Image 1 (tube, one colour):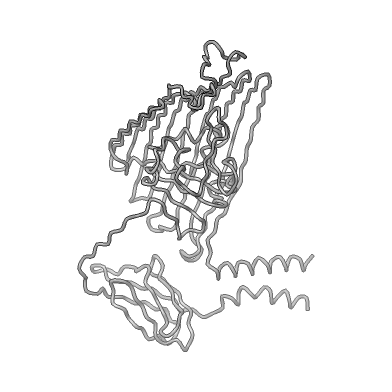
Image 2 (cartoon, rainbow, N blue to C red; image 1 turned 30 degrees about the vertical axis):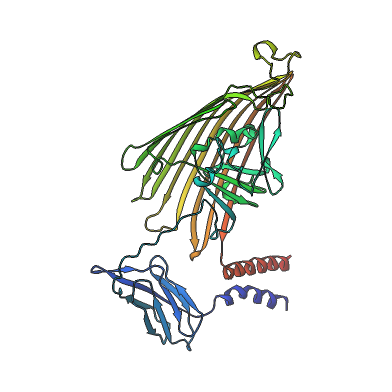
Length: 468
C-alpha cells in the first residue's frame, strides 16, 4: 500500500498536464514573405478558453472534440473563424484589414503614480513632483510625500533621517539606479550628497524589496534615477539663494560623442556662511558649510546588437561646521571654551553597468553591475574625535528569461559585497571587514504554474520522507 501511494503522488503533476492540446503558428504577409504574428488572440467559440501567440507566432491551446470553431483575431487584421476537427498542427495566415485614418491619443502622466503591473507596491515620483518643494538634495525631496516621514535626528548637526512603515533609514535600502549607494559610513549624511537637480525620478517600494537589488531592504526601498546624457537637456544652469545665507550652483552639459556613445558632466556646489540663531539659544539653527560635487557619466548603447553599458564617476568634498554661534575653529577647537563641531568628508564613487538584450529573444537578457566607493570622514564633536574610512565594493551578475512563455519569468544570479571599515574614536581604534556572497532567484508565475510547482515540491518531500 505504501508503494502505491508513492506512485500516485508521483503521477499527480503529470496528470495536471495530461490535457490534449492544439499547437500551431499564426503568421501574416509582410511584403512577399511570411512573418510571425506575436500577441494574436485565440478563443474557442462559446467558451472562455483562449490563448495568445508568443514572439515567434507559436501557440498552444487546450483541445476537446466538442470544440469545433476557433476564433483568431488581432488588431489591424481580419478576424477568422477556423473549423478544427483534430489536433493536427495548425498553420494559419491572417490578412490585414483596410487601413484606418491616423488617430493620435495624448495623455498626461501624473508626477506621482503607482505601478499596477508589478508584483511590488511601487510609487513613482517624477521631476514634476520634486518641483513642489525647493528641494536641494535627495534628503529634502520627500517633504511633500505622504509615504515617507522626514525628521531631524540631531538638532545640532542638522542631520535628517527618513522613516517608512515606522522604521528609520538603516532598515530602508537606498539605491542609485538599483545599485546600493547610501550605506555604511554614508548612512548619516549620504542623502545630502545627491543633488536634487541630478535626480530625474524616484521609485519608492513599500515592504520588502526585490532580492535582485540586495538583501538589505527590510521595510522598503528608495531608488533614485539620475539624469541620462542621451535624454537630458544639452545645457542646464540653476542658481539658488535664500535669505538665511544658503547659495547653490548647478550646471549640466550633455553631448553626443558618436552614434552609440553619450556623455555628460554635472557640477554642483553649495555654501551656507550666514549664522542664523532665531531662537536666541546661542547655537546655530543650521550648520555652516560648503560642498563641491562633480559627476561624469558615460553611456554606450547599440540597439542593433542589444549591448548597453553605463559608467558613472563622482567626486565629493563636503565641510560642515556647527555648534555655538561664537565658536571659532581656529581658537576653540577641542576646548571647553566654546562647544563646536566640524565634519569634513571626501568621497569617490564609481558605478559600472553592462548588459545585453538578445535581439532575436527580447525576453532574455543578462547583465553585470559593479560599484566602488571610498569614503573618508574626519570630524570632532566637542572634545570627542571621530574619524572613519570606509571602502566598499559591490557587484552582481544576473540572467533573465522565461519558463515556457512570457507569463512565467525568472531572474537569477550571484552577488558579492565587500566592506572595510577603519574607525577612530578619541583614544580607540576599531577595524573590521565584512564580506558576503550569495545567489538569488526571483520568479513570477501564474497561478496554475505555482500550483503545479507546489505539488511537485510537496510530493518530493513526501517521497523522501517515506523512504526514511
